Length: 412
Image (cartoon, rainbow, N blue to C red; front, side, top):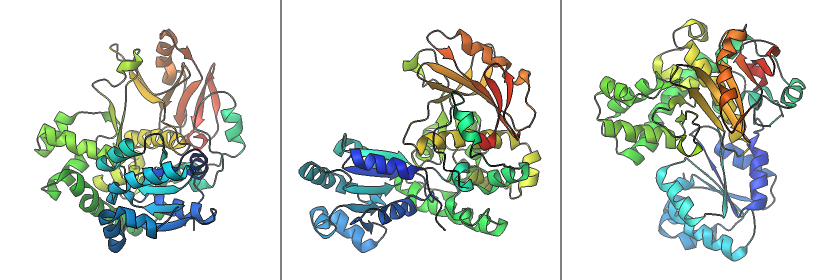
């Protein structure tokens, strides 16, 4: 059963402004399904997949002939397998001067994105599709990016659905991949089968192509060590020590995880905007269920009480915030704060010169002590302080102090 995706509106908007639209994202997040569903509402839009060996051979060896056989408007699935098609797409869009000619899906890999930037600059709109958001799983139609300000809470209250604590942890442990949520949360066997295949396919189809991994065992060990550090400051030297790989290999493999949307780095906030990319970002995995699979957490009950609970709750919450922006076709303006005095804030949303500070706590009863560090944001020159709060497992929003609130996960 197809669940509507919030990115559908974004694709429709981009198609009105660009000759081509590219949907990227990790494997199994629903890129193909989304484009096929979009195609149903677009008369004359054809579909072709480069997963078909014969079609791929035609696309790679005879690009000009390919587009005589497959004329736009056209959906091209798995475009990363034939990046040589991009120059032809450029020529066609320039010649026809029409919008919405090509809709493509592909994993965000180095060679593909390089060809996109070189061939289709100014001619292509891009959206990074995440796995299901909580809103999409619950069937909530509200699709604005999360921002704890203005009328956001009033708007969300109109369609927020309850999320009991046990269901929250089932979602964190079972994950948000479409294949596991089409008919409700997956069972343990279905979950295990999915991620066993997913990790094997990911190594064989993506990582080998990008990094020439010599040892599957060694890369899997690296993947497990990285997963165990989700929500922590990036410490590659520690991973190197635990896996026995070289620092350069660790850096290359991490960059592949990021390019494949398996993991991402949350940057520290800096007073100097040009230097926000500082030495120590925080590492997060995009899929909490993948972390659970790699680390052996196959039951949500002990997970919610275990040593990884805080890190996984934080990973899930930040992931939901980022999804709300990604589905809208926007880069999430998110950072974390840490200063030399040891004051920390889990998440900052910085937009239009306004800082919105947020703490993330897995308990359900936040208090003023949880927002004590927020005072540092009031002293940052050039920025004003906006509403913030504590995202937690409470059931209803409540004022903590001033414009800061206890924010239920269900309001993301």
